[in-house]
Image 1 (cartoon, rainbow, N blue to C red):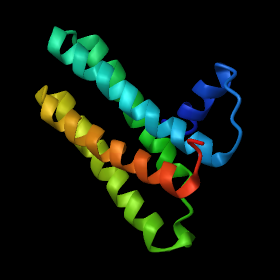
Image 2 (cartoon, rainbow, N blue to C red):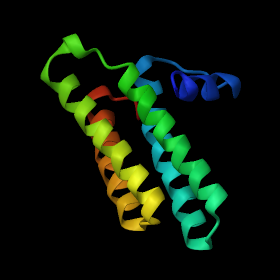
Image 3 (cartoon, helix red, strand yellow):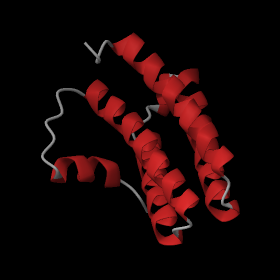
Image 4 (tube, rainbow, N blue to C red):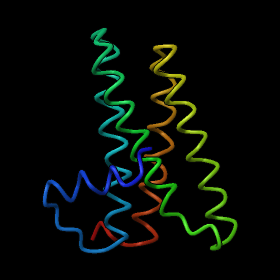
Length: 124
C-alpha cells in the first residue's frame, strides 16, 4: 500500500540523493521527524494530524522493509522483524493515544540512525 511513498516524497522535493546510504539516513531522520510531529499533535488533541504523521512514519518504515535484501542474511531478517514491530507500536500509539509508544519507536530509530552513520560514514 505504501510502496515507494517515502522515496517519491523525497524525489518530489527534488532532494539530491548522493547514495543509497544517504537515502537510508534520510528515511531514518524522516521517521524521527514524523514521530515528533505526531507526538505534538497527540499533545494538542489534534486527531487528524496525529493520524497523518503516524501514517507518514509507517509509510517510511514500510519503504525501509521493501528495500531490505532478505537474501543478505540474518541482519536483514532481524531488521525486517524490528521494522514490523515498530509499525505495530505506531499503530498502537495511534489507537491508544500513547506517547510512550511513539517515544519507544523514536528511541529505536535514534539508535538505528546513529549506528547507520557510524557504519556508513554518511554524516561526514
